[in-house]
Image 1 (cartoon, rainbow, N blue to C red):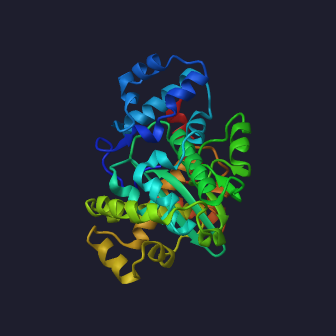
Image 2: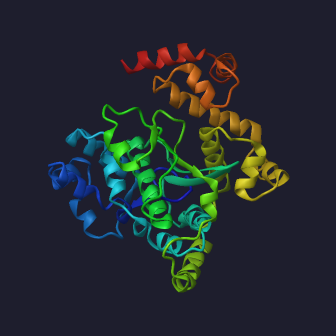
Length: 344
């Protein structure tokens, strides 16, 4: 999982330590690691140092090639399953020694913005349920499904470190298309797994957030937290990208509202409105833009239109269809058919 910012794709990078398990998974599946890396346009020596970085677009290209070569739909999941909190560096270490699970996830959510990456984590709490997930935010990235699968798997591993190995999510939601074989996903997550969702996340009881972190060493936090704060202080926060991410994640979990966005960001409605005005935007226009983007993504996945309407929070399919005509000038079914024809 990487930082909640949305830099241009040419600037976005991924640290090798976050995806260090890629060569291992390739070997397990019988692939020639060096050959796959070269086919993806990468120097095989890039994995020789965990502190190396690669362009985020190159990570997507590499994962796409890994899936092609191995035929493994769950490649990203396998990589994430082998990755623990230490993979996200200082942020991961501070989270493991935070006072509560809420504080640990806050550390991850807030301070991973010390790297210029193409993805973002999000935490949403609504009533008695919490959702934690990851979204690719950089444009034109290949193998988004593999990146998000792996990132959710890493987050699940972190939760098991924070809460104990017996911890389980209530449900996992993945934006990827339904795989031919769901077994690897069910075996790793050990809970209900839904596919073709609006966002990639897992849901759990909100009360878990107040639990103390298991095995924490307060003295470690005392030493490490100031170092992390210093790193975060030297990084500017991209306000608009963060608002977009919050809205996108809350649309995906069906809980979006102006108040919930403000609560998540820790600002008031007037502040939100004023800062969006500086970009020539309003909350309503930005939310509609993101609903339209999400609707297009879901329509491309051949999900029933009635189900898309429900996922996006519309009262019924007719209300969604009217909104989609306003956005695109076309009915959802006709828009989907046109995209299908373009691909053939």
